[in-house]
Image (tube, rainbow, N blue to C red; front, side):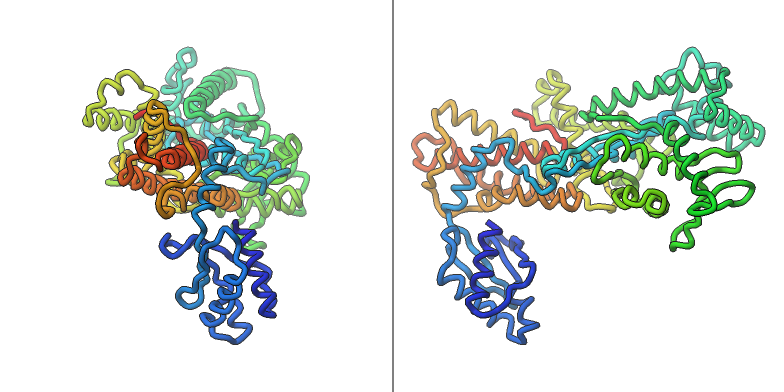
Length: 565
């Protein structure tokens, strides 16, 4: 439809002897009462033509009205010079038909067709517990991978576990001290990490011991420390695979810090004296201050690569193995300056590989009413938070007399809990902090994941009733003027395209809430599955179209769409 309207605008301008701008912007008015599309083209041209923008808008609108597209019923001027378009009921009926025809394919586009995007959607520290920050990263990465695939890209999702680090060495030291080598679990490895970190900061002798263990592990020197490390690594990696499976995420490949570190060290040393320089006590640095950035150490005075060097090695590993058009990393906004240094260093080292590496930053997560308790300091563990939210869901469903359903279906409870969490993560714009409120996030009314699920389940219930009544969907309109539901359904592909172009899942989250509100209003004001109603077949078609779009949208957010709630 956008192409049709732009062509009509260009034709009108040509007839008026006005050169069309290179880009004609079309938007949807915030208020549906103002029409279905709007353009500011007259306001843009009025400045260079030195004309009154509203008068120019009226000339353009009049010219379009002389030969307007069949899908348009009215072209109107509003405000200081906006031109608004109203679409015909037949257009909405045709789009409803298209939704029913395309089903799960509706919303998919080709804007990124032929592009391969490597997406690093999780980078956990294996010897640290999988906490809420990791859950946030994974949730955003999973949604982005689905959105980019829906936009036509070949997406390669990968994980980058930190399997070798000072943190791992702290945990190994503590395991050896507490004689847990033969009884290691994910939980006591987490305890060991906390204890090792505390002692590293408080005891100089312990610090020297852990630093030596760190070097032994990096150099793969055989001995008890390496044996404990390798066993702990396997336990932690198995746990990571289990929890990501629980969360519905898959990876095409894994890169490990241990391999990236060795390669990164070689790359940095190769460019010593050019891109990298000698620092204090034999360390190797990147002089970021030359480029308006931070100067950072890449190799320590002990000859060990730190995160910076590992990230340089990782870039080469990624591009040599998968040859992506773009490499995208999901990371915390507080690491923005760090990754600006990495990108600059990588661009100097690799050229195009560095330029094609991007870093998507999300905000920090906070809890409404303050922090919540955790076994490991002030950062709650992912599974603890999920189970806590599940408990809240069970209580909520029990309070509305659905206790038997809760007891019978733990999967549904978990799906609702994850919907509450994921929607809270994804509804926020890029880089903005996230506030998780238990009550609001689990509400079945308003701006929440469970509200979207409930709206979908309600539509499925209506469709089951229609089937029982023998009412088949029909796109022949036998109802009044198009309402909000029809005016929103057809926009879904535009929303998906924008979310893919901007790497912004929040566009889909915002749209789905608006769509759900329109559906629930339609449901409240209409008897849909009434066999005696001549308009019932079209109402059922709208219910089916809504269910299709909502299911497709929820899938892009990695939120389950329950048939019943």
